[in-house]
Image (tube, rainbow, N blue to C red; front, side, top):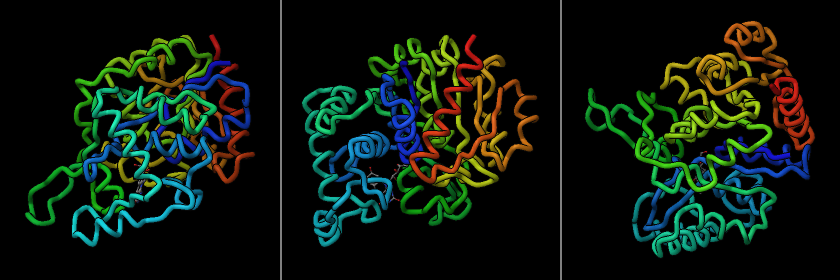
Length: 325
Ligand code: FO1
């Protein structure tokens, strides 16, 4: 069975571990978000690609959900001693090696997909990991400029997320470069040729949203013969992980499972999903989601452990079979 997953970072990676447990023999292609990427100290950092790579390759820090296990921070301390900014982004020593290899290959002219393939070879990933694009796309967030009251300024998503903890209002979310970006090699085929396309509980705006925002990808999702099944990243009014609710407000979407389903939209009504899994505690929203033309099912969505996450993945694949045209 060929499965394609549009994934962000931590939520997407956690879901993928459950999916692999549920379908160990499936041929899985992950299309990773690259709009969180940032260049720091001359190094290209790809948080969402690295989180998938480390999580499925066994190198992830379980406690942080990002970066490496058994990490040390000497480079970070030394950089701080020199007074160079930013100091708010945690670059571990082991993690820096990944960015050195990536930056060296990018500088030598390799595209991000070739670089990602090379890095993943070491981790012997059980999935194929493709960046959404080899072109540079970066999410920037428009906030109130604290130094000039009454004016606004755009900051990199990582500064908004890591330094500000998404605690200030995001007036606008802009995927800079998206309009000129092309899908990376293999991305459109992975969407067209799969048996099921899954939207895991990643951030619908800054992870799955930015992948869909690469010209050609949303259209490919709308056209694929595969059922498209999403899993809500919101339970009740809060995110399963991260701070998805903070960026939903920026695009005028209420932080509920049914609001996110409508944000994606039914494929039959020019949207991108056919089915939508919500948590059992949100069952009261099933009718409203059905009203939007989306087939919804309520199952436990808290990814507490691999067994629960595998059950969620099973439910998503069963819904896909029920909806297969
Ligand atoms: N997240 C944090 O909250 N604090 C950090 O210092 C931090 C550093 C970091 C370094 C490498 C990396 O791949 C990810 C890192 N993240 C950090 C997580 C990152 O901001 C998020 O994984 C995504 O960008 C949002 O999904």
